[in-house]
Amino acid sequence: MLALWLEDQRLDLRSIPTPQADGEALIRVRLAGICSTDLEMVRGYYPYRGVPGHEFVGEVVEASEPDWIGQRVVGEINAVCGECEACRRGHPTHCQRRTVLGILNRNGVFAEYTRLPLANLHRVPENVPDEKAVFTEPLAAALEILEQAHIHPTDRVLIVGAGRLGLLIAQVMAQIGCDLRVLVRHEQPRTLLKGWGISPIEKPQIVPGAWDVVIEATGSPQGFAIARRAI
Image (cartoon, rainbow, N blue to C red; front, side, top):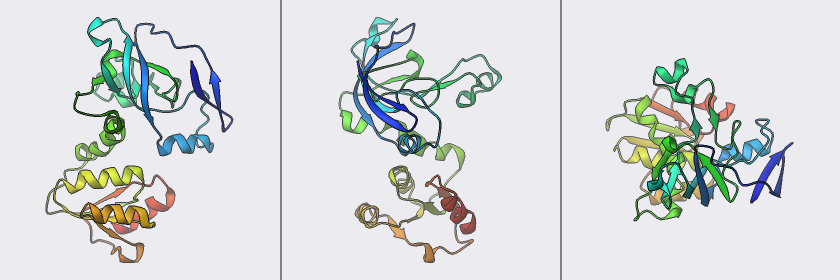
């Protein structure tokens, strides 16, 4: 199969063996998304060697349970052991033996085929097109914030960063009805936010102590410093 191969900060289109299911589901990739993590890995953020990519929608072509074959799916990216202390305590994303799709010891989705355990897969409803389903993984990351912090409609919320993830988080927070502001630096996200009825602000407008919740969405030391000062 054809795949993008990352090695020594270089991406090459290669022909590599199609993965064997080996008890997992073999999935034909229909559409893959590019994440900031992927871009940073190419820049050398993490010494990964293999096929990158972890945002996808695909079709199951081989599985131990026949009902899955032909199903359009998205998948959770952490493949875990289910037996270590972290897994037993209900924290599988901290599994000591986990592999991570396109990030850690598991080839990703910038290829014609990928594989994942059946337990990681979620069926895509027929009325959801691939172009929306491919956002499931980053949208799940945005929604996880609501499990980490109890945000109320009366809260003043600041999102630091208006990249791809920041914009998804902003759309999630907007559903709560909170007093929401998003720190932006560029015109395109500013225009998008205004179109969604979300207020963008610039750095000089951030008043320390004026926020009930601050969400750092840049993943950078500079963004983290801004978020800390805002609190």
